[in-house]
Every structure is written in C-alpha cells, then in structure tokens.
Amino acid sequence: MSEPFTLFVTYGTDHHRFGRLGSWLEDWLADHPEVTCLAQEGYSTPPAGSIPVGIVSREELLDMMRTSWAVVGQGGPGTVLDAAVVGKLPIVVPRLARYDEVVDDHQVAFCRRMAADGRALLAESPEALRGCLDAALADPSTVVSRTQVGPIDETVANVESLLRDLTTQRPGFVSLPRLGSLIRPLHRRTAAAYH
Image 1 (cartoon, rainbow, N blue to C red):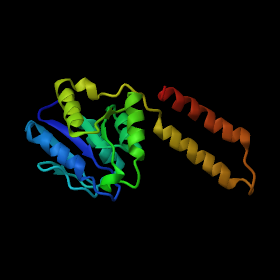
Image 2 (tube, helix red, strand yellow):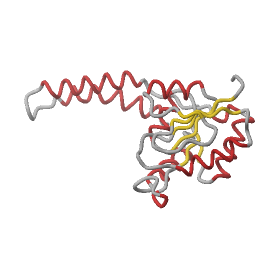
Image 3 (cartoon, rainbow, N blue to C red):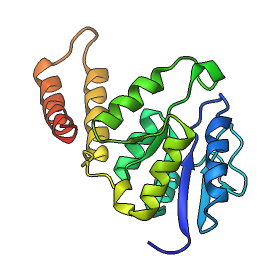
Image 4 (cartoon, rainbow, N blue to C red):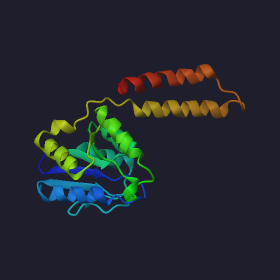
C-alpha cells in the first residue's frame, strides 16, 4: 500500500440523499490528513475534503475499489459484491428510512447478515465507523476479503445462452434439460462461493 492511503467511498446511485455517511466520514477524515478520500457520491454531498468522482462506469468503480486501501459504502448488495470482486471487505453503513435515505430499512437486515457471514464490516453509528476505519488503518488485512467470488463473466454468458435458447423456442416450450444444464453449475459455484 502506498502513502497517502486512499479511501474509496460509494454512495451508490439511489436518488435519496445520504448525508449521514458524509458527516460521519468528515469527522474521521479531519483526524487523518494522511488519508485521501475518493467519493463516488451519486446524489449525495461528498465528505468535506474528499475528491468527488460522480457516477462512474462499473469498470471505473471496480478499479477505484481495487486500488484503494479500504472501501466504505452504503449497505446495498452492489457495494458488497463489487468490493468482494476486487478482494475488499467493505465497511457498510445501511441507509435508513427514518432519515429519508431509502424507502424502507431493507439495508439494515442485509448489512447485518453480511457482517454475520463475514462479508462486510458493519457500521451503524459514527463510533462504529471510526472503529472500523481505525482498525483498518492499523491493520489493512482487516479490510481484505477472504471470499472467493464466482466467475461473473461465465455467469453472464450462461444467462445469455439461456435467454437465447428461451427466445428461439416455440412459445410455451422450455427445454428443461437445457435449463438444468445451465443452472446446476451456476448454483454449485454460487453455493460454494457463499459457504
């Protein structure tokens, strides 16, 4: 890891604002001038002193995650999966409906489950976020994912093949053996990756 440390923050692309995450990060960043913060802010205001990057392509997002010391993000599945793809264990802050950050509190249950499964570090308070970041700064291995993510390109190719087969068959006909041959390997790899 090279100095200064680069922290990548992603707010996702949801149109709801997520100022709470920015204010929590501002407090921590003020105490850590050695950290450069890149913020994929979406529709939210990035933390003061960060470098806003806007909404970027997935390839750019993955590259920024890959080259960063740590990843912090809103608690959506995309954040957790994308971080895992590049070998990062993300620090996630679930959006909350009571602050009009999202339509319901689905991210709370999801983030708690991901944390329990060792797929994310959960920060539900400014103190928890500070603790996760301080621990990661002291020992960067705390934000390295131990999870192997399946071959996404292969999965996409299988889904494309399945859809092509389904759209070329006569209406109402689905070849169950063909469907099974595409889904079984995908299911085995996905199950193995998440257990």
